[in-house]
Length: 308
Image (spheres, rainbow, N blue to C red):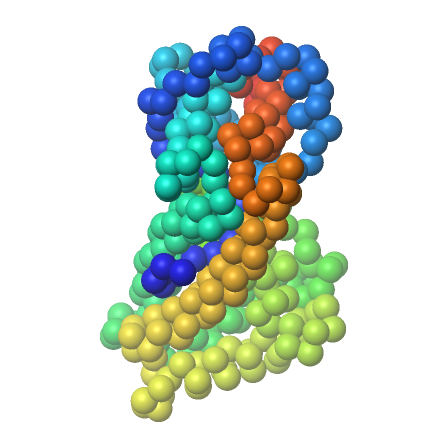
């Protein structure tokens, strides 16, 4: 296994460009009705995310070889072939499990290192915001005030408890506040900006509600543990170190799960179970993703396929 520091989660969107051309009637003419029907019924490999304007823009940047506003099957197929050839490290025309996982692992590491750095930069800004008197450290009174603001924001009915009855702004604060175009979403840390994250951080007794004392006590304990030199305030280094420890634990845990899942995915796509994947087998998921993005079935991915 190669030496890497950070990785993790979620299925990755493919990025890059390709010049390799794939000949053949299927690539040139697009998917036949039978191929499209079969792909729509297949559930193997990566799952296609919903087509949005941002995702379409990204696809046009990655796959659109001729510079128009559509991605044809030929363009998509050619790009996938280039990715397959890069994955085929020994150049024997097929991909084994180690090649498949290693290629995915490289992209995973790169993407989640970007996510980690985005989190660190955000944490630096959060430190500056909490340091209200701008003395270069966070006092307990400043940390406490932030916790009280969080509680007040969520306790909509002012009953001293945050529970499901207060969860009226979920759309605003968003369980999916990150997006695939935002590096910070590559490592999804729990956040008090959404109800699920708030409960994960502060519902210590796991009774599906957060009392004010519960929230304040949890912040107090974290403050104490983060103050490693025990001088009563948090320096930026202490504040960053505590967060980096948590984000690294999240990344490493997710990484193990993702690598295991990649081996499973290889086994699923290896249709004839010969321990190697041909390009046709690789395209089992490629065809399914293309047909699900091509919502109107006109043979191209375009603005007409964006979900309203």
